[in-house]
Amino acid sequence: EAQVTQNPRYLITVTGKKLTVTCSQNMNHEYMSWYRQDPGLGLRQIYYSMNVEVTDKGDVPEGYKVSRKEKRNFPLILESPSPNQTSLYFCASSPYSGNTIYFGEGSWLTVV
Amino acid sequence: QKEVEQDPGPLSVPEGAIVSLNCTYSNSAFQYFMWYRQYSRKGPELLMYTYSSGNKEDGRFTAQVDKSSKYISLFIRDSQPSDSATYLCAMSAGTGGFKTIFGAGTRLFVKA
Image 1 (cartoon, rainbow over the protein chains, first blue to last red):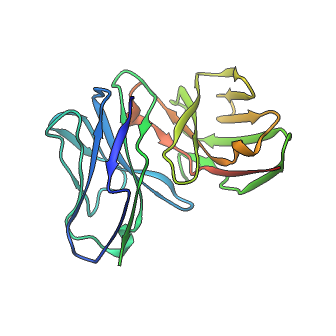
Image 2 (image 1 turned 180 degrees about the vertical axis):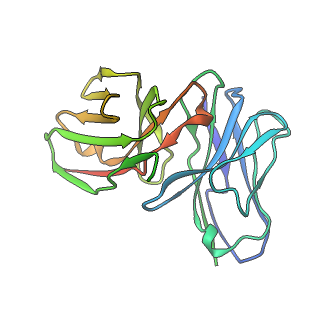
C-alpha cells in the first residue's frame, strides 16, 4: 500500500528537549515536505526536499531542521522545542512531475 | 494579503443540501487547482484536480475554476454526513507538489 508514515503520532514534551519526528514514504517520490497546521492558519510549509541531500526552507523554518540522506526518509528535528511549536505536523511526498501531494496521518506535538 | 483566501467556516448544512465551497487567489500564474478533503485526525487527501479554467465533475462533486475572476469553487450535491470534513483548496503555478499553496480550509458539517 502506498503511504507516508510518520512517528510518533502523539507526543508531549518539555521545552528544550530535543526531539525527532520520523517520516518515510514507499512511493519512490523525489519531493518530500513538512507542514504544520494551526487553527485559522491552514497548512504552512516548514521545509521541503527536492531529492537526496537537497533541502530548502519553506515559509516557517525557524526552530526546525531536516535532513534527506535517503530518498524514502525525511526526519524533522526540533533541536530546542518551545511552546509555540505546539501544533499538528504533516509529512508529505509528491512525484516531481505531478501535483498530487500524499500526506501522512499527522503528528500531534505538545510542548509544555 | 494572503495568496489564497478561504473562509474557514464552519459551514453547517442539512443532509441532502447542495454545498458550495470557495477560494479566491491573487497569483495569476496559478494553473493547477486542487481540492483536498481532511477528516478529523487524518491527513488531507486529494479530492479533485483541475487544470486551468472550466468545470470538472466526479460523482457528487464538481470543481469550477474561473481564472478571469481568480475564483475557484467546489460543489457537493446531495451532501451526506460522511462529507463532514475540512476542505482545503490548493493551487500551483507549475507541476511539482513543492510549489503548491494551500488555503486555510473550510470546516463542513452535514447534519443527518
